[in-house]
Image (cartoon, rainbow, N blue to C red; front, top):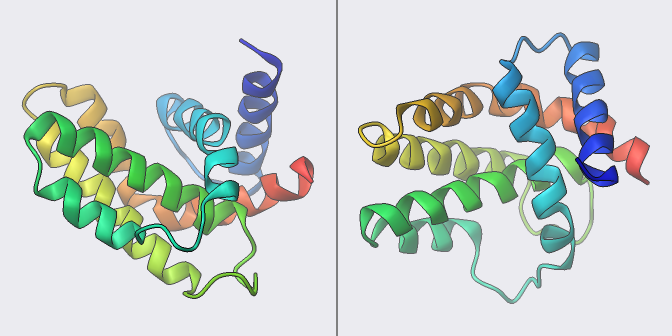
Length: 147
């Protein structure tokens, strides 16, 4: 485990404990991995790119494998934006509720596609879908440790 992975793992574990989120160990590790993989990409994302809702709509028009991969990515990035970046950020054209709505839908889409092929991943994505709001709140505490 690299330094950033260990840092995010420890930080997410503390944030979940502080907010009394009873997430599975898999969800906790996944949350840390999401930050490790997507934080820089989300921070550098241009406002001129397609919206997350547009990306999810495009993903839902693809075959099952691509649909699951893209929907999961959209869910991950929405979780990072909703949880890691302050809701009052003036660069945001929409509020945190938009990211939560799209993220919940994206995780639900990926879980549905994966249910028959990889039930464990589908279960994890369903947990993230159901706990999206509380995880996003907990990640706001992570933001303070990173910056």
